[in-house]
Image (cartoon, rainbow, N blue to C red; front, side, top):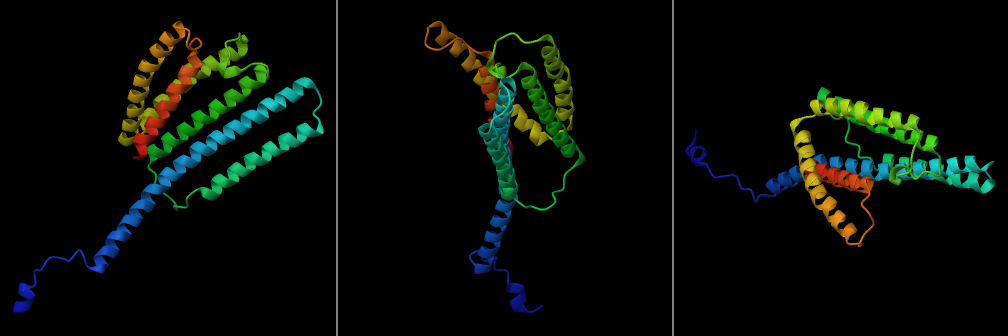
Length: 235
């Protein structure tokens, strides 16, 4: 070894153009790894809400038509436009979906995703069936009118037996990161309920707002829970 080689112990120059290039490439790769996850979540959330709204509109409109007789040409056009909007939302979601290639997914993660999809699918089927049984005159979610024994038994069976079993299986299959995000959403939504429920109750007694509707409170807590859950999971 020459003397020059032995004394050449100068530190790496991080200001060198090649060093900046490597740092920039690393940052871009890191962004590419993180952004698709958030992008997929936004597409699923916004696209899912849009599809749910359009499906509910078509379901209610079609049921009302069947209740009042033969559909007219205008009814057919409205239903056709609704179907086109659904197809457009689906195509837009597919087009905007990031192409990240095959992702390595562990068995537990795949199982938790399958259980979540199963629970959402069963909820949609139950909601559609409930709407068809009750008819268009019932406001369903925000109604306090009496319902029949058959739909009540079906909904209670799914809500009190099927859903808890699937939820328990999902909870046992998720990883620690997912569980921590889910617990974070639980704490935030619980505190939100602590403030919302008594606050609404006091305001209603003072005559400032209508009487408290339990389903509105329930949906508000669910929205806060989901928002906090996703925030913790993707940040």
